[in-house]
Length: 194
Ligand code: GDP
Image (cartoon, rainbow, N blue to C red; front, top):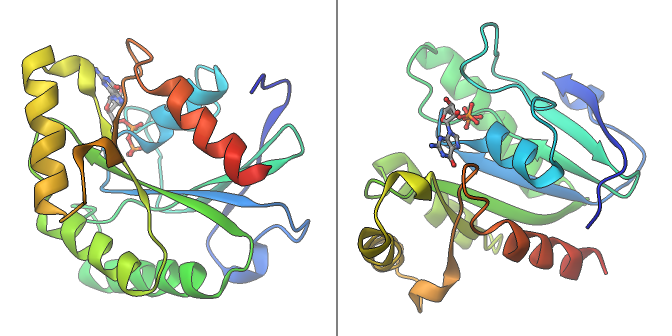
């Protein structure tokens, strides 16, 4: 998809702030620092529409980006956010859960997992929770440029095995550096928007 318009709509901290324009929402889930903002910026070819962790002041908000007036990317607060207090984490957990279970606009969910490591306990819990509610996410293995070609293959098999996926073909390796996976991700998005 050629992105001609990309704008941040809102960094929401409450349900009342979610956009009401009824556009389909493509949701990004993953641990803090896994590369969610970079994933958005890479797909839309904007260097910094989505704020990345290296920028100070990144808060735990739900960020809605409107793309081509056609759909929203929704960058969810990273789970396993080390600096957040337990109360904050619980509050965010509830908000994410409520959004995912009730929001009718959700068209697709990408769960991002760092391809260099085994899925964390949080990754596994999130994945199982999603599947339990019939919200089957597409799995993205991020930062693929940081591992060798041989290890890339091993990495997706390992992720697939630990998540009990039918095949490692269900994991899309992605890299903001080499753009690996970018076209494949767009194909999936275009299919659900069709
Ligand atoms: P978020 O917290 O999930 O939104 O993660 P960010 O998008 O802010 O990324 C966290 C850090 O990982 C940043 O320093 C990014 O530059 C880096 N990063 C993200 N994606 C990639 C990638 O594909 N390759 C490499 N080498 N670094 C990446």
